[in-house]
Amino acid sequence: MLEARLIIGGEAVSARGDAIFERRDPVTDVVATRAAAASVEDAIRAANAAAAAFPYWSTVSPEERSRILIKAADVLRSRLPDFVEAMAEEIGASEVWANFNCQLAENILRDAAERTNISMETEVPSAHPGVTAMTVRQPAGVVLGIAPWNAPVVLAVRAVAVPLACGNTAILKASELCPRTHSLIVEIFSEAGLPDGVLNLITNAPEKAAEIVEALIAHEAVRRVNFTGSTRVGRDVATQCARHLKPCLLELSGKAPLLVLDDADIEEAVKAAAFGAFFNQGQICISTERIIVDQSIAGDFLALFAQKMATLEAGDPRTGTYPLGVMISREAAIRVKSLVEDAVAKGAKLVSGFQLNDIIMQPTLLDGVNSAMRIFSEESFGPVAAVIRVNGVEEAISVANDSQFGLAASVFGRDTDRAMDVARQIETGICHINGPTIFDEPNMPFGGMKASGYGRFGGEAGIAEFTELRWISVHNKPHNYPI
Image 1 (cartoon, rainbow, N blue to C red):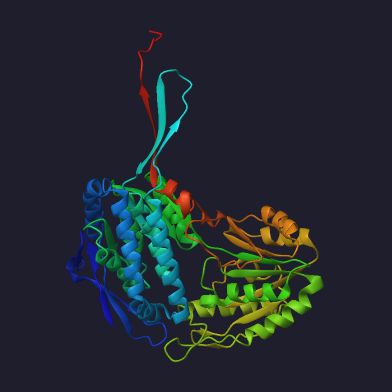
Image 2: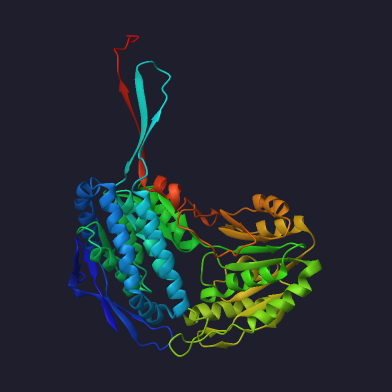
């Protein structure tokens, strides 16, 4: 058991009144982390510290910001064992998932380091003689990043890396389920030489989350907010931001479809579908939640898929080399169990899996899922592959779009022109052809449509999210005015 303290103005400090909360290991139920339980006053102190650091950090050269981000990437790599341990104890993550998180987070930091050199000034032709006009991107101010537990290193690093690269200061609001993991992220920045106050950490007890977030959003120095998490909480964050006219980036729930067309490479589709449905026990926003298979090849697909599932086993990541870990909580496992039971009761076929031992749920394959079943529309966030059979491309597209969510999708077909046409018709922010739904690159625009949120992390889109775009003009000769 380790402690996680608040980090405000470069100092690790206790919460007001030395308040703490405990995060318990989801497998053993022993205390994994004892963390500072911030008050509203503590949150305001963090925002004030970020505001005080902004005038300096916003004027630091792009080269220096880049150097620190690259150093942070190096430090993250060197501290991989600490992240593996923290993720196992706080969220029951497998070693392969922790490694995946750290590798992608390292790439995000290195990509952000390259973004500091992007020109922030662009000359624009003016219609008026003697006027030189330009657009200028400037740091926005303090950025609040609210990160979740499920991909804790990737999503917390993503919440702050590009904002820092642009010259903003930041507050990372850690998840209550992995406060130690998120505190490690702020530690690596400090070790990399990030000046005091540029990045601050708030950890809070679960029951205080709403008031802490509300206070941070309301703080006058906070100019941008990004949130990754559920659609339910995202609506609350968006409401608070709207009340204070603060732009926000929301990356929310998903129900990613993987379409297997009649000309698909079935072996490749099976590999991608199994990876997408079961990696990290399906607890990823871009997990494959629906496998939409053309009826003509469904039998062959299911036979190969069942063979693949036989190679996958979930277990406590500290007791063996399991490719899959555990569910985040007993409540989550029971909720997924109820979705499977509802589907079976309404006619779905349980092809394989569904052994549940406390919070260890083995990968599960359902065939014949339809819209009458809860699992058709509700985000499962668990290790369940739900197969929906369709007749033809048009029905496949219709089923894929029959969802309130629109984050990620995938299409498998040997005719890539046809697959591209299908991809263009799917209502998601991200779509991959002949690749898994779980696929990310730091330089690409990442975000969703519909109830999956709005705004984009990554690349030039991320720069636009975390800067102010201004128009500045220079008038080089006298004007004649109408009055």
